[in-house]
Amino acid sequence: VEFTVEQTTRPTSAEQRAALMADPKFGRVFTDHMAVIRYKDGQGWYDAKIIPRQPLQIDPASTVLHYGQEIFEGLKAYRGKDGAVSLFRPEANAARFVASARRLSMAELPEELFLGAIKALLKVDRDWVPAEAEKSLYLRPFMISNEVFLGVKRANEYLFIVLASPVGGYFSGNGSIPVWVSEHYTRAAIGGTGEAKCGGNYASSLLPQQEASDNGCSQVLFLDAKERRFIDEMGGMNVMFVRKDGSVVTPPLGGTILRGITRDSILKLGRHMGLTMVEEPLAIEDVFKAAATGDITEAFACGTAAVISPIGEFRRKAGSVAFGDGKTAGPVTMKLRNALCGLQRGEEADPFGWVHPV
Ligand code: PLP
Ligand code: COI
View (cartoon, helix red, strand yellow):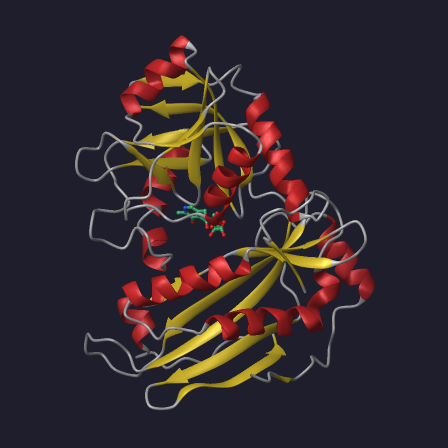
């Protein structure tokens, strides 16, 4: 597919861009352009283009505004020391986007179009990929239904867009994050949309996330919806633990948690490094006990935005428990983080074929 390109007539100057990218934090700075593709039943995907970033015009009766048919992805473009730009496992994001579309009964965007849109956007906004090791260009592909109709049914029109945003770390500060255990609100039930990356999952996470924040925590940890006993994942990232014997444990995929690409990469990379990587259910009670006795020594969050962020402590109504000193990242966490980041930036060998130069 050829993307038509309409360059902005008011490009951000190099000086302005440098100022915006000096300390971009997460998700507030955007590049000059965006990719757009439309879909209509009977016509398929059409009108693929790169245009100046601009507001959308949407009919107030557009289905997405009423019934929330929206899915998204998140991946990053990295700049290596040699200046080369690459993506990390973008095919995995393309495949998950199709799976999310299927669950939300939306049109399925072919992988070539997903990747093509990102590449076409990077061609015009390449200068926005930061060079510093802790920064990257976060890409946000998303799709909304856009039929003018108030009946509740699968829509017949969709709009796919890719935004790009230079980012630093997701969390403010570099220390370990405190995590709130949500004992009342859950995220996803069996048979629900937990495995899909749809906006609705995040909408329902905001109240428990606020509860976390009110309790001084940076993220919320969700438990299974049936027994509220087993750890699922966090509001916007998966979770892993390190046992005293050096093995790394994470909850298994069971349909209620997101199939994190970072999670999968860490499992494979860890095994490649000779670590024991285990997927098994973790009861919250056992984790509190094991952290207190020192049987679990480290915990960390993992995801595209989070990268690998050490968790300092878990808090719940009845009290809290810390990992290590509650402040410093543990050695296994750091080892995995360095290995993953080195690979993503093209500084380490890539035995998996994950790095995708663009
Ligand atoms: N879980 C949730 C709820 C997320 O939003 C994310 C972030 O995308 C992840 C896990 C981690 O997924 P990934 O590693 O593919 O970014
Ligand atoms: C991502 O890591 O891409 C996410 O979607 C998580 C969110 C916290 C931004």
